[in-house]
Length: 169
Image 1 (spheres, rainbow, N blue to C red):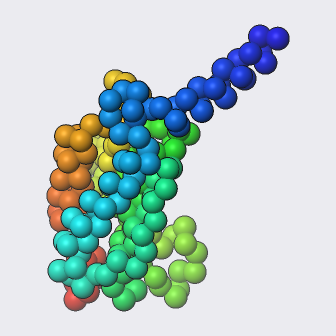
Image 2 (image 1 turned 135 degrees about the vertical axis):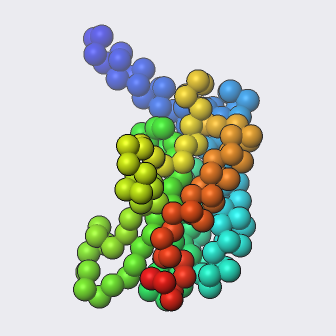
């Protein structure tokens, strides 16, 4: 009986998190955050990448996150975000992908920006860019969203290793 009650509690907590998480804490709902983040990243990152000839080829956002794809020839910059309750802490991430005919496996033709940063700065422990407020277990505030976006753009500029410019890559 106790085990069944616990299962019902977990199911209710999952439903409650999805339906009230952002508004209950006076912050974002998952859907409003992913929509706003997708729009903001399309503008900010898209403007930056367009200087290097990248064009947005894909945009998707729903309650659980989304992704953007910017492409220039065989080079791709993917941006993923997740606000799904099972992916806590929520995050967004920048990933470089090179479509190479010799590498015919999508698991081996991409690398996240945080992994490049980790290799270049010994002893560091970089990770995805957070969308989580660990104090409330909800989604981050608008001020923190601006900060994490600024940090992501700065890392993209600093650690792209010439991936964005075709003559250097």
